[in-house]
Structures are given as C-alpha cells and as structure tokens.
Amino acid sequence: MNEDDPDATAVTVVDLDETGWPLRPTREGPRPVPPPGLDTYLAQRLTPPPWATDIVVYVHGWQTSQASALGALRTLMGLVERQRGERAELYPRLQGDASGRLRGNASGRLREDISARREDTPAHRGFAPWPVLVRWPSRSLPSLGGYRRIRDRAHAMGTEGHAARVIAQLLGYLDAHRGDPRAAPVLAARGGQYLHLVGHSFGCRLLCEAVQWAAAPPGGTLGWSTPAPPGRPFTVDSMLLLQMAAARDAFAATFTALGGAPLRGPVVATYSQHDRATGFWHLRAEKRAGIGYAGIGTAPAPVSCIRMRPTAEPYPHTTLDHRFVSVDASEVFVHGRGPAGAHSDHLRPESAHLLLSLADHSR
Image (cartoon, rainbow, N blue to C red):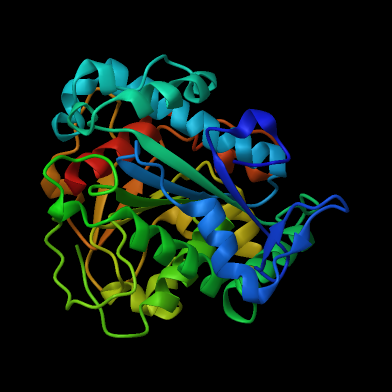
C-alpha cells in the first residue's frame, strides 16, 4: 500500500531517490530509509499476500511522474484483467474456478476484488496477480540534454548508486517469501507465486542491472528449458522489457551476465520503428539506435525474433522459450505525440496478451 495515496491499495509502491535508495513517507515528506532498517522496510512493504498467485514488479521509464507511474501500472493490470476475461482459452494454465478469476474489466475494480480473492480457497485461483511498482525520479526536459541526463542517472543508480543492490534485495525478499512454485499442489497462495519483471524505457536498465547484480555468484533456475546450476539468490519467471532505452548490443556489451542470470524464463524485449525516443533521441545521444527502436542486436545467447501477435492469436511455447526474444511491435506501438513518438504506447491489449502468455508458459 502507498500511504500517500489511499486509492493505491491494489498496488504496493516502493520509491527510490536519485541514488537508488528507498524512501519512506514521513510527516516532513519522503526521507531515506535508515540503512539498518532496510530489511524491516522490505518486510513491511513486500510480504506477498496469500491470495496472490503471481507477482508483477513494474519499473517505469523516462518522463514519468509518480502519479503517471501508478496510473501506468494500474492501466496495464486492467488490460491484463480484461484480456484474460475475454480470451481465457489462450491461457489454459491460468484457469481456476470462476470464483477465483479477476472480476470486472477495468483497473478501478482491482481494489474491491482483493477482499473477494482473500475468501477464495487456493484451489479456485488460477491467476491472481499482485502488482509492485518501483518508482524513481525520471523527469527531465523533453530534449536531447534531458534524455542524456536521465540516461546517465539511470546508469549511475544501477552501477555507482544503490538501485541494483536494492532492487535485487527487493526481488530476493519477494522470492524468499513467495515459496517455490514447483512444490505447490495448486498454482496459488504462498506455495505457488510466480515472479514477473516488467520494465519500460530506462526502467528496463534498472531491472537488468538488478538481475545482473544478483547473477554474480554461481546460481540457477526454477519450467522453462533454460538450464543453470542451483544456488541463485532469487529466480525470475519472466522478464518483459517494453521499449528498452539501451543500445542494441547492451546485452553483449553491458548486461553480459544475463546470459546466465537467475532467470528461469526468457528476456523479452519489444521494439517499434515509431519510437522516436529510442530512435531519434537515442541515436543522437549514443550514436546508435536503441533496443526500443531496432530490437535486440547481439547478445550472449541466440536472439529469437518474432512479431507482436494480435490479442486473439496465441503465442506457442516454442516462440517464447528462448533466452532472448526480440518482439517487433511496429504495427502495434504506433501512437504518440511530441519528440518521444510511440515510446509510451506500450500500454496496449497486445502487451497484456504477451505478459499473460509468459505467465501461462511459466507454469
């Protein structure tokens, strides 16, 4: 729950400062969490509720206010709810008894549904996501200088600052308290919670830095085919990077450890040639196009290239069961005004369909 917003009871919010350190609300405004109290803070914020079957951690991108970040995640979860309600047959492993399905077709209904989910028995719940929002200061002027400033801030937060370690600890805490989905007799409650990461723009960098930070020690996986030794501090069931603001070779040059990171499922990145932020602006800031405009280039493992599918067309397991998947969304992410173009046109039913497909194949 976000104490600053009583309407945000359906979303758990973690705010970071410019160094990537968590902030807590006080009467004097947001203040850094005392370092000795970080574990307590995470415990207070991040114990997964018993009704949840899946945990969705969302990190927003460039030019996003706190209110917009919250609105974006609510919109995405509303689209997920609606897509599953209208196309439930596409996600057979997410099916539960009708009493356990998400009710309604708008994100505004999420709040009232929480009490209903708590009353369900675990066997009735096939898919009940718990959204967690990580917010960070990403506002700047919509200019080349502003783009560079937030690019540098995101990089510094993940490397010189605390963001990578803090988000990794956040994910590790969630992992420790969600139980092992493999051990659950049903896909529900504390014994069967799946962890999905969703990033947008520069938020994708922060997620990649966090997972890479956790990939340093020897480690492993949780039902995707990707092999890895046991012992990782946490495992992630899917990673969806929407319009990532990083160079096409970022996985080969910067996020090199993701090839063997604590990821049970794939790294899926969308791109659109209507995205001017990662095309026009990224090209001028870094002398090369970004992933969000041109897709994943080189990577530590082969990259599978597919198109973004309509909401009525399924994603077979074989299309997504790869370490890196580059998804061409040029026919979907097309709308946008101003210098960023379609950079923020990612809140679409097709994105919800892709996220649901990843959750379904994680089972």
